[in-house]
Length: 137
Image 1 (cartoon, one colour):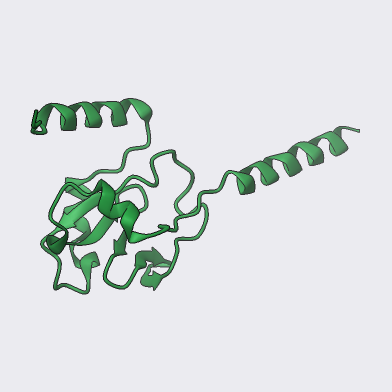
Image 2 (tube, one colour):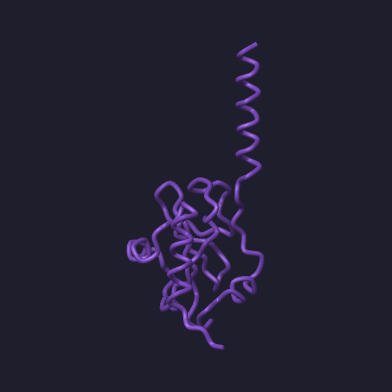
């Protein structure tokens, strides 16, 4: 009887993990453009710190590592690098408009935009951004 209970619990855990997996497909560039705080002519890449991946607006593709190699695909696989509420958080990368290989700068981007996995850390980051941003009233 214990075995059946353990198997049932395991099955529910597997189904729960699959059901809560995140999919990373940007519906349209308009979604990113609406949220952009910088000039669009200087923006080509968005960097996802928790995933260590890029989104190229020029070709509408993601650039990320798979088995140690950088690949370009139309979406990032579900559950890539584990589950986190902040996996969809991205940073706008300026200055790489003419560069086709943003992954060359991954070390710089890791330092500049560290991953955030805890809500407390995200609140601190958002408070800093709010305090440092200019407001026009």
